[in-house]
Image (cartoon, rainbow, N blue to C red; front, side, top):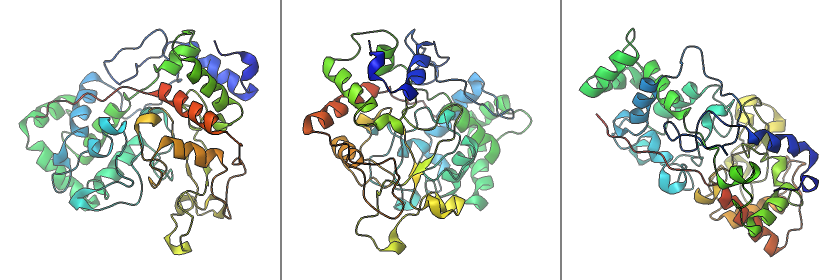
Length: 350
């Protein structure tokens, strides 16, 4: 077991809370949950988009369907693939018409628990995020093209049938398409990793090296200050979370080329080049790292963060050189492999 004396007081409650059985299992809808699954809290579901099995099944298909994109080459899954840990394999996403986008595609496990979406938090709902990706560069349809694309989807017999059943009063519309996708995404829950089993009482779930890495993660390295269990982010079922400037993407760039992050949304100077803290669940599988995909290995990402980031005019005060040895960095990287999640099931499309 983790010894209480090793755990910073501010994190003890978060760890204790994981002893409760959760409603969904790691790996999404239908995978089941074990007695060692972490309690992530209650997921907020919009009153106008309740979860149903049929809606989730429909959204599952739409999530994987490249026919939703303007050129038939991109689906939601294109940027969130199993072989890349449910994130993107390129430094920055490649959108419809083979256009390079400006930010990396993040892992979306536990995405339904978030309060804000995108690296800069500009979307206030999962439905808004899906609409943005569909109409924006990812899938390239454009706001003015959503109605026409919905009509194309409606012409597919298998979808026509399902939409008539799930949305009998609306049928296929841009709104019902994103509602179905969002319903599916709310089932992408990862809460039964080896780490979760360990803190739930399975002493053999982590190796001795992984336990040493966890001690460093919670203690000397102070990773958990921002990547707080059980979400391993500063977002949770009850908190929007803060945005931090770590210096990523700033070195040797002219000011005009720097991604100003959250400031684009808040228009506050204090948010200059600040970004959302990503979850570390599945992080060992989801290279490259950071909002610009500029770091290719997990070891390099740990070294950068534990080394205090890159100095700039808005560097977060939480970042400092933690003076980790090579062995300690390696132990943290070893521990992070215990946060590996499952894979998305690939459906048959109509």
